Length: 441
Image (cartoon, rainbow, N blue to C red):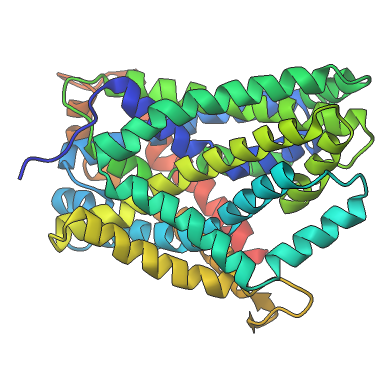
């Protein structure tokens, strides 16, 4: 059976960018930039993304297209049984990430419903209580987790062109338009420009080893590297698409979205004297307070949580596609059956993760919740290990095959050797550092 393809380069770029622009870009990136050097950190992040990050992005896309297979099949075809374990690790990491990511995605749906049906409270304690009730409520959390997983399943089951690509062409422009609307409204608040300065003005004194580590980690995470997504998406690229140009577009749009997220969050939070903490506290406590202080606050709040839902959905779609492609290619399952099976398994694991919240978390192991363990294993172990092995595989095992995907011919020039050293030496060293720091956390 002929392998499905993206219908256009634009469809691929928007789908890949949608994978990168997730909840982490909105609730973590602004906080990290504001607290670790502002504009100086932004420059550091940009430099790392356009060097090591872009190089790895191009490599993963080339691996997928060279093998004409998803994460597991690509490493199997190009490297044999031993290297296929790298692809298997990517499949496992994606499934684990999706299980708890869907829980958080469900929260965006719950809050969207709240802001369109209830007045916005102006008391931070009420929003803190609401979030605790939602995340620790059991059945409500299961319900919204299920709705979010069903939305993800529906899109992936529809296929690459009719599902993922078609939805990305609609949702990604909507996401950028929503961001711009909220940014303009936030900048109209008195004192908002001081938040812009905090985000953009360089503070060289705040740059240290921690900032470098954070910039590296954000670069890899925001580009969806080492989890099999870009290998799988790259395998759907037609041979006529310029792979290098597509990779550059994805990297640039991802960086743009991260900058927009900072301009979306920090100026209004600063103008109203609210905190700019990272994570759920920012998204589900601080930002509702921002909208509660604005005229038409419920409308702007609805736009914000719709934006969060879109960001979460486009990422979860790409994550689900990795294990689904594995079942389709390796076990020859029909797409709908593969999608339903993986989504069902991830939903069940997500239920265990959702029981990690509340005043008395139901499931704990060695002082860490199920949610915490899943996040720890995926972010601190699976992704760095997979990234290191992917770099070594690309640079020292299949580099000639990848050069063909880039349109290279003849002997490698000096500049290409620089690229190879970056991918085969510097990138693995950086990820080993991230792995070491993650294991110590």
